[in-house]
Image 1 (cartoon, helix red, strand yellow):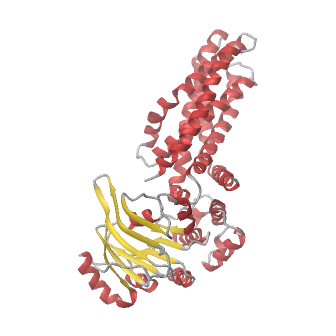
Image 2 (tube, rainbow over the protein chains, first blue to last red; image 1 turned 90 degrees about the vertical axis):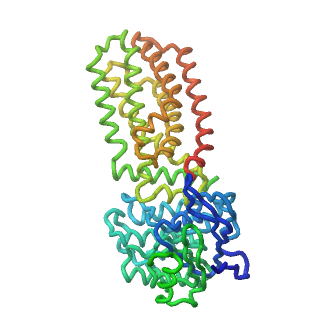
Image 3 (cartoon, rainbow over the protein chains, first blue to last red; image 1 turned 180 degrees about the vertical axis):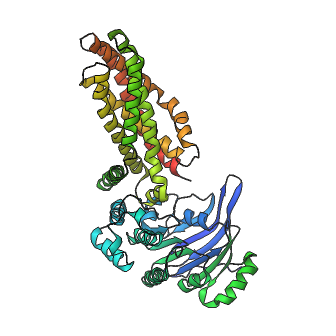
Length: 246
Length: 230
């Protein structure tokens, strides 16, 4: 296993050292170590039950780790949770949207909760970028899953977070939307932001990332720059490391 | 402070809008309360002597069960599509989230009670406008919502939350319900006899309710962050 290190250009987006989390007697994260530098995108692969979602929830301040050290943008999530929440944008399997509000009302609601300045301009900007302008005034429950996911992504990006935490973001999106997502994430990293995403899709995960990692039983079992692996190599590597096909 | 208040009123606005669209809280509970009051009205002959004893209990039994139904829905609507996690991810203090949800529950319950109080007055042959009863209703509902918001946040992830919420919640809120029944009896006794209520008896219970509200508003706001943290 390669222990990833800091890139030396200032505080990292995420620094985790010896992170553990258990639910009752079930250990989910077991001494997890990794660093995600600013301006980088990390794709995390792992089998079901390997701890990916728990890790995302821990990074997102929704779950508190039991031991170890975690810093998000140099902030301690246990003591500076409000500042961490201002820094991160989170998209999970759930969109966090209210079914009986329109897309626009949902974005206004979250915009107010985040205190987004020039909110209307920002919403229009995101609606154009994610191509859901025509659907903004429809109630969320009348929209397709993919369209809901686009609005959910806009919600995650609304307050211009520096770090994006995305749990299988490509699920339910069509090719057009995946193309938009890839472009957005590349732009985000090019502007100095960071992306932490989990996925089961090797091609998309490798296309979007410049670092790849494999989580096995709550530990980072592999972490390398993307440039060192091809999709074909990665599939056989994954079977070797995780013991199951990706 | 401005951001804090803005977050509270944004949650209130969102819940109000959702209720206007779905009508999942106020309408079914109004029907429930109406049916309970009608049933009790037919069960008892509303003589002046019986009024003070029975009608106060009838009123608060129906409001209490209606309140539990409302509290269950208040957080259940957050559970859909992970809305509760969405709220917890916002950079808003947990107590602001608590006060936002508390105000929603409080206003929904109060709306139901203010519609049903005149109906109750007509059916039980009581004056339609008793200022002391309306004041008591506001204070009791505040205490009920203050405790209920924390417990409904606790119960939202439980499988049998509809059953567990009253079991967990009633023992804590019992003093405020007893105070409401006792002071309502004093009000109805006065109204039935055609005189003002027994003020000293009423004030004693009202003070207890106000003290309960003050204590549980502070305690519940402080506890809320531990209830919602995994």
